[in-house]
Length: 132
Image (cartoon, rainbow, N blue to C red; front, side):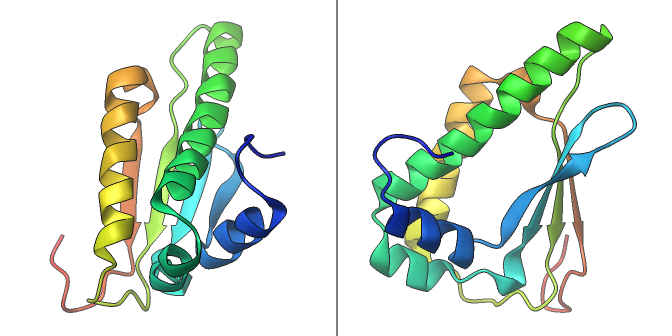
């Protein structure tokens, strides 16, 4: 499934150039989102798919997670929050400014609309040039 406004071609680019997906949930029900930054290709993605469409996709993913967390929270009786695992193996120092601008706008929207969704982000396999 995907949001209105994205073509099948957009969706194919988004899912192949952004290597990230939900992978099950913790024992407490928290959905686990895994990002493989070093395997993603934001430069190619941003050359082909517009910033608006990338932002729409990120908002769609957040909305799906929020709906899951909201339902799980009501069912379980305690807050269920997303856990994000960011694998930085093979991550490059060069960053696409367009992608990070979109990511920043999406993050600000989520902070405003869904502060209860913001759980824990765990980064691992950081390259030697990166300090966390």
